[in-house]
Amino acid sequence: MRENHLHRVDCNNFFIQENPVIVRWVAALTMATNDLIFCSNKIRDTKLDYEHMYLFRLALAHTREIAKVVGEAKENDDIKSFISALSIEAQENYIKIMRSLGTYEDGSLVKGVLKLPRDEVFHYPDIKGEQWNSLVDDILALDRISIEFNTADLTIMGGRYRFIDDLLWKRVEQRLTSEIVNQLSIITVDLFSFIDCVFEYLVTKNKI
Image (cartoon, rainbow, N blue to C red; front, side, top):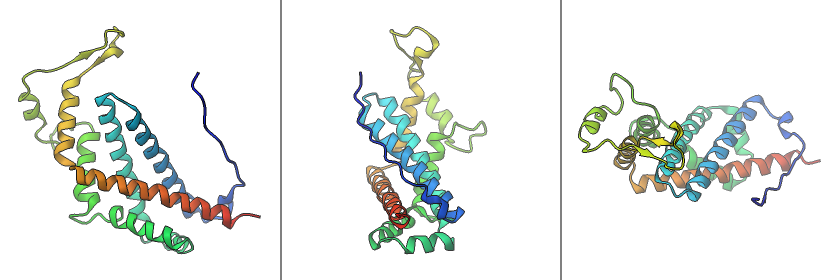
């Protein structure tokens, strides 16, 4: 039986005292944090290449989604006021997050680096070929169409179409350099650190 090392901490509901905008913003940040931590832990633990790829695609999608929230929050006065009450370290941390994820201008990380790879490797190919427009040529150029079967599972659940895994991973490598992946990793850690500061502030602020 797997040992459980989880320890749960409950506290009074400090959200009752907060503006609804702050509640929604913090909820979005915590959802993203949970999702990205889950993906990171699973990527670290798995030894299967296609699981690595799927989890990476998933993490890319989560990062793109939280970028939308960061961008929307940029001009919100209630959120700016909330952040100004945090520690200097937390404020500086959020400035770094905003610089990376808060803008959609040409050449930005979100538009130029994050959105296109996310769209191509997470969304399924569209029939018109507007995304991943080389897909048909990429498939036709393959020497073999590889399908993998699990000999321990002879049902339909035991099959995997490996040719599309190979093409997806090749596409990821074309779009995302190791430098960009490292940059995304740093942003993720900054997000984790920031939300931790937010909760520390909320707990301290509402402590009786």
